[in-house]
Image (cartoon, rainbow, N blue to C red; front, side, top):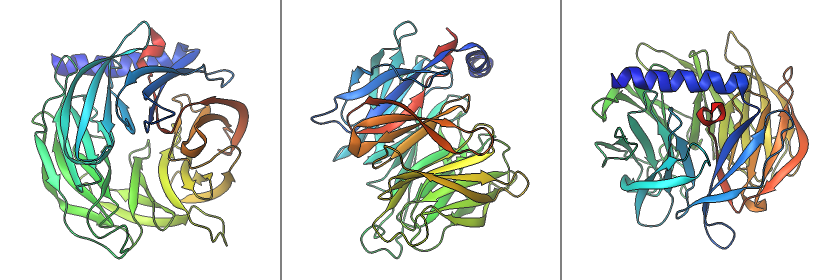
Length: 377
């Protein structure tokens, strides 16, 4: 019965929201301090691209990464602070979009920096950068989190003496069929592959156990293509996006291309952050911190390879995160060092980003999430 309910929660709100919504709620994770107090909420007008004035909906320490439950009723945030890491669960008020704290659990390591939810909504998946570990936390029927039931500790190092002396898990994502978990580890130049049992909340080593990136690449964030045949990883340290072929039988990943994110000859410092695949699957986007741009690529639908389109730089400063609305019309870019979120219209033919002139002020924004289910209410 629970599985059927979860399936209905996943499909009905999503299709309804995309078909009928005129606007969609947006939540922003931040680094807290003088300019920010926690999680903020706005709404995006899906016709004009205008963002409403943001409102503080939850005070919590440095909620640097957020994820919304597939059913649209709960939101989860990691707190990227010193010492032991924590994850906080919130209930989303259907009328106001406000957040009510449910509970908090340890993240299974130190310095959590990324969270996702498996496709059935049973478990939260957390990457702990500080300790180089990945953890699974069960989600109870009322949205509360249980203590970690599965923790995988990474081992090793790589060639960069400043950034790769030890493991640094940077993201945790699931395969399209929910059988495999992928943890991009910047510190060891590997994408670790696990067999995920969402019902039991456990991780087991896979065969193959990992996909290796180039030495010094520093894999950070990871995304599957909607067709389930390809995936993409953005490498923070060598500033590349790699296209990967995905084998759904074994979970294996094979690199088929490495594309630079920077223009030729750019010599200043830069690190990459986020990678996104357009909902229609025609384009891939990656962010540059230093060059202060979003790199745009066109996807070959048969090969999965990337062809460079453009760099968009207008009003962008340290884009740690960005996101594409579910209709594929707009890209929202969070400029961490400009305390702003700007809206770009996506050209449906080329994928190029066009500044709309719409932007809002959010202190130290570092994560953007859309609440698709709520838009249908």
